[in-house]
Length: 137
Image (cartoon, rainbow, N blue to C red; front, side, top):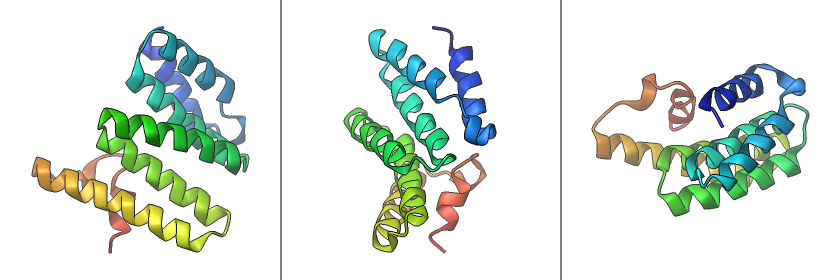
């Protein structure tokens, strides 16, 4: 399973809106699971959730994110876990759940702030992370 397939599906998920390639991402996730490529499987779950948010399939997006969150925490991957919390806060916001929105937003910021402090680097320049960090202000 070439990484280029994932990158194309990821690009489609971010740019295609409602026509996002959910089936392609789910197929790639299945292949990644079969090949024991845990990080790629995690990323497929995250981008599947992004794709599901576009057509307002919030329950499915939330399920995908919860799966990714558990997997990311088991692997100890802080950036994908923070991305999961950020997307969960988007789902909560879109469904009108203000308390869950705030909880998820705080968790995402807390994780990224800890990563910044540990790495002694500024993540504000990283694509996709700056908007999450700006929420702390």
